[in-house]
Amino acid sequence: MNKLRTALISTVGLALALCSLGARADSDTLKQNVDAVIDQAITENHIVGAVVLVAQDGKIVHERAAGFADKESHKPMRVDALFRLSSVSKPIVTVAALALVDRKKLSLDDPVTKWLPDFKPKLADGTTPTITIRQLLTHTAGLGYKFTEKPDGPYHQAQISDGFDDVKIDLAEELRRLASVPLLNAPGSEFRYSLSMDVLGAVIERAANKPLGAVVEDLVTKPLGMKSTWFVVDRAHADRVAKAYFNGPSGPAPMADPQTILFGPMTLVYSPPRAFDPKAYPSAGAGMIASAPDVLRLLEAMRKGGAPVLQESTAAAMFRNQVDGTPGLQPGMGFGFGGGLVVDPAAEKTPQSAGTLLWGGVYGHTWFVDPAKKLTVVVFTNTAPDGMAGEFPDGLRDAVYK
Image 1: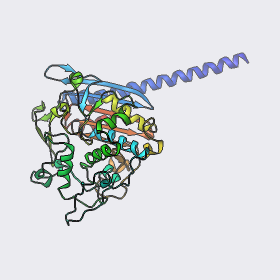
Image 2: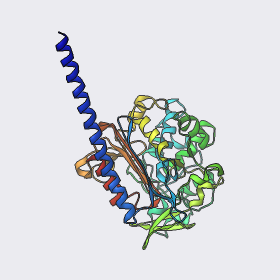
Image 3: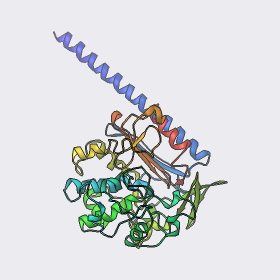
Image 4: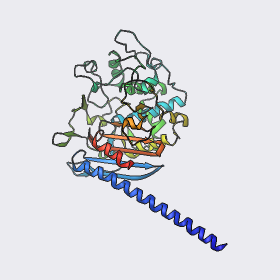
């Protein structure tokens, strides 16, 4: 009997050792694949620097800070570097709004006018439709972005801010200008990426009776231990902010203020100093600053069920298609709460599982959460737009799934 017990113990020990060796080999392969993509992007002048975090089943299996936070001064990138989030702001504020829903201070089907009585944009025929909180969250409110229209478009004429440019107005004036322009489609009829999140930011302020930054801190960043996430960076943390670059004809170059970048049919106008300006309105859709570990902490909390911020059912709703049957998204994609949703991986031509929540930011970032594989990836760079779209983020995604 003792010999049998000893043999069993030895067999189990050998199996565990082999599993450990296999896991370590898989981890080494992952690191090699991911690092190769990062190194190639830096060598070929697609990006200046990056922070990449890969978490599997709640554990960080790869963490890398590569390249420069400031190339001109040879300042190396650090894992705790701060980045201008642009649209990575959206999932953070989305969680704040959903936390208010859990607390019965907001309802997804509330009309926006319940909180913002003067926000009544009209349709082209002059009628005033009802816009709901749900439609703001899902970009189906009929609003748009200035950067998606022609230079003589109505948003340009009204001098509306995209939330990351140098238009110096407060949130009330931003909403007044936005409401003065006709809606681009009837609410609920079409998905159209838009400034709806900035309107939602104003709703959140009214519903919680606090400034947006304070609400986000109380409901999201403080409970989750996100100690490096704000709408404005103070001087104490200024040296951690990665310098902003854009892909110029001769490679990445430091952004000016303002900096205009042509990206396909879009014209993006950036103002890097906005991150330090306490007078800049808090853009819920594009105005936050954070570290990659902070955003990973948020995304992992949602993947695991939302605690301690959201109820489990509310967090689960983020990973369900909220715009099923609504035109406006590319084949294979839907939209959850806080980001796009992979509905059909084959149609989307992605190795990601159905139900993967993902998005990016025009300052050069991407992220995704694949619940089926218990996988969360955050990729922050300081280079636009190559850090957000194209060969680098696609190659890194594929390297993770290899």
